[in-house]
Image (cartoon, rainbow, N blue to C red):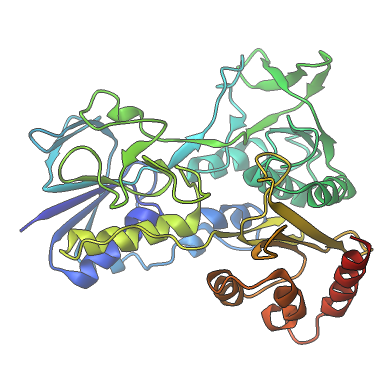
Amino acid sequence: MEHIVIIGNGISGVTLARHIRKLSDKKITIISAETDYFFSRTALMYVYMGHMKFEHTQPYENWFWKKNRIELKKGYVKTVETKSKTLYFAEGDTMQYDKLIIATGSKPNKFGWPGQDLEGVMGMYHKQDLENLEKHAPNKEVCKRAVIVGGGLIGIELAEMLNSRSIPVTFLVREDSFWNGVLPEGESGMINRHIKNHHIDLRLSTNLKEIKSDENGNVKSVIIEETGEEIPCNVVGLTAGVTPNIDFLKDSEIELGRGVKVNRFLETNVKDVYAIGDCAEQHEAIGNRRPIEAVWYTGRMMGETLAQTICGNKIEYKPGHWFNSAKFLDIEYQTYGWVFGERGRPEYEKHFHWKHNDDTKCITVAYHKDTKEFLGINTFGIRMRHETFDTWLTEKKDVDYVINHLPEANFDPEFYSKFENEILKAYNNQLQTA
């Protein structure tokens, strides 16, 4: 029986295993050094905030794996020998495979800061990070202050988590406005104000120089690069992006870039070896997407796609229109299609921006300045339907159509306030003055 071995039990690896089992009777083994069972990474924050227990983050009962004949092995793969199709484990044992799938995800970036490996320094990505946070920041008495380094989505989640336990937070963001490499100016500015309104000490255009230790090897303080200021703290969250978790492949035959290099079929340069999820790097980016996409839903899609290929129906990975969602404290964010921030915005891309005067709701619609074709939308504080925007992007609707039909896309519950008339009025006024 063909043995399919998957290294990594995140959303990509588990989706792949489930779909292979639906389509075949192949022998399947999932290897993980992190946890016994698959859990939802995006739910870790809610465990710390008291909304759920860790076992609630596991979508499948423990009996699910045995019933579906998916073997689980807890262990750390040290090296991969592709010629003999053998995995060597840190514990000294080995495993043979017929087809190997690398789905090892990401690890937090570290930039060689002095003190970055001290006790109390952590990312917010793995279950071990959650355990570390509980140990070093159970309450504001034990953790007098936390410093978060890096202004992305994981940084804002960690700030919200600490905030929920009334732990003071200083947030160091290298850019001059929060996440402005991704968000247009109006949105980024609104999020700056929102963070400060939650009594978080947001420091823009600020870099970490070093993390200082007490006599026991615990975090004592951080030093700011620009001013030399010392900020006393007990926890440092490193959330300055992630890097593919592929160090164990350095001496293998498998071609690596920043991630594991794959083609459109998610195949590596070595026969019968594939890569999916956060650790996979496309040779050439798909459309406007990045070659590496550390996004939950693309990981799931790669798993579904590759299952077909492994079970004899070879298909290309086609992720479709870009979308994503997140939360900035209590403001929900959704994006469909492409809306560029200040960085890398094509010269043909024009924006219509509307912001509610309560400063917690806004939308930005991107369109082609010559053809008026709708390119994408960002929404903050207003929920929209994915399917509706997906259809409009496919049908290449123009911006006038989209603005006039926004009520069709609204996904907010019945008794929520609706803002489409206000948005339409602002759009028409902007057109008259343009």
